[in-house]
Length: 252
Image (cartoon, rainbow, N blue to C red):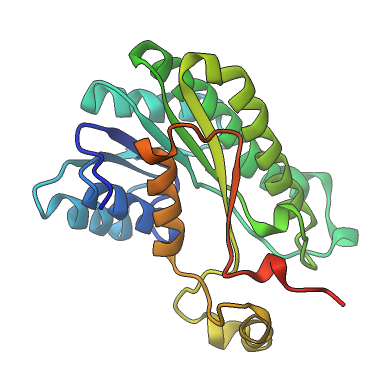
C-alpha cells in the first residue's frame, strides 16, 4: 500500500469520474487532498465527505480553469489550506464530439484552452510552490488519443498530444528543482450508462483489448499514486499508458 501521509495533493476536475476516484485514492493513501471543481455541488461535496470520513483531510477549491487567474487561485487555496503542495494531478478537461469540418476556431479554443491551457497554467503555478519545498510530482491526465485519434475528436486528441509533450518539456526544465512531471494516458474508462450510450464502441473495445475489459477510475488512480510516490522517484517525462493493452492491438 502506498503511503502518502504528510503529502498535500491537488486534483483538478475532481467532482466526478476519473478525478473523483483519483482524489479518493490519494485520501485513502494518507494525503491531504484539495478537491477542485468548477463550482460547488452535491457531487463534489460527496467526494470530500468520502475522503474526510476516515479522519483524513480534504477541502474544496473552486474555479473555472479556462481563466489563468483561477488556476493561480486554486493553487493558492491548496497552500492556504495545508501550508504546502506536493502533488498536482491535472485532470480537468472536456471531451466534446464534433466533426473537424464543422468546427469553428471558437470550438477549437473551447477545448484546447481548458485541456491544454489549464494544464500549462496550473503546472506553472504549482511548480513555483513546489520549488520552495524541495520538489514534488505533477501528473497530467492525457489519453491514448494523444497518439491515436478518434473520429470527432480532432480538438481533443490534439490537446492530449500536446499535454504529453508539455509534460516532457516541463520534466526537462523542472527536473533540476526536484519536480517530476509525467502523464497518464487512459484508454476507455467505464462510467454509468456508457454501454447504453455507445454499445457498438464498447463492444469493439471489449473484442480488441487484450485484457478484455473496460478500464476503471481506480486503474487510473493507481497509476497516479505510483507516479506520486517515492517508488517513482527516478521517473519523469514519461507517459504511462493505462489501456488494458489496447495500444498493442494491431490495426490491420
